[in-house]
Length: 134
Image (cartoon, rainbow, N blue to C red):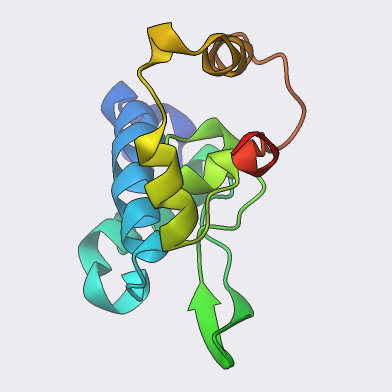
């Protein structure tokens, strides 16, 4: 289709690349304190445009307090749980991300296996929050 707003014109790559790769990179960058709209403008723009065409919501601007100052975050959309971004697991700070990275490999922790299995089978509603398990 020549119509850029026609959903069928979005290749399968965009359907996979955006939630599982670009949102992962943007999510990690945001957790590490980057302003992703300014420091990753091409990835940000691609996700922003693709989410509109796919009728999903990954990037939504919110302001929160961090160490007494206001910080703008973007990885807050209602569809974030469908991505590989750390925010899909409720991870929003460097400390939480560090704790997550310290978890044992999947096969050594049955709770992680259970959570990941639920994610894969979409047997959860909304955002999974690992904070209660950390």
